[in-house]
Image: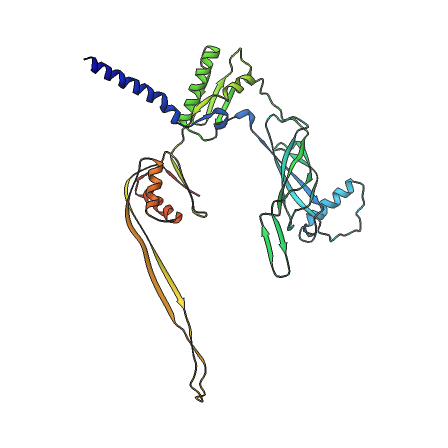
Length: 373
């Protein structure tokens, strides 16, 4: 009897040890890494400007008349008369300037801007963006951009060949915009915090609410969070809490995340991404490829001497068909490693694996969402 009770005690200890270790295997993240504050979103800015100082790679005034009009208007604002003058230099380009205004940005801080050509300019390398105002959706000017343009691509051209690497008609101006107007913000006056999950999921939203409520119960004496749906979690502000400090404490809480099982396939690049929760029911797969090779080996037939014949070309075509593969393999993926090993054992390339995964999904054996890009 004593041995029996000792055995039960040993089993209980092992079960408790496994229960303590199991959560460590799960994927955990901070709330700030999986959710964003609704009141702290970015705002998009846009503007129209000119880039000068190009080495003959700018817009042609005939094909891009708006560039010449913009240049004349800019010079007139600077007190320079342009009447009667006509320029054919291609050292100016019209561009669209875009930027993202970060949340809670204050006047005087700098942000990066992106410039993109509007006309027929071939390269923006070496150019300088002239002072450009950036407006929001409400038409108000929030920033002013100016500075040297950095282009990652390059273009080399000769009389008979051209080499282009990357995109030369778009670039960036790091820290090129200065914020001039502050966005109206009422963060301190808010009565709640709304967290938006970057990857909506009901399980993750519920876990965030439970973790926040556990923290609030210990700190403020009651729950404050509620999961509205798979994307939003609303946190009510306690009366004795400071909203900024509350957000700083909440965003550092650790949550066990969960995502639906997905298989993402990009047929253009042959990229396959398989989630860790993907499962495959037992299924038999056979994959074979048929290769047809056509070879043209024309033969030249010469006439006999003194026969006054003509040289002729006799076509000769050889066609060879070869079929490889054809092995039958049983794939059973209780976990990601087993699934990948089963696909590799068939000995096919990524394009073949894409076709196999699509076939497994059609057969109803792939327990995941198949996303085609």
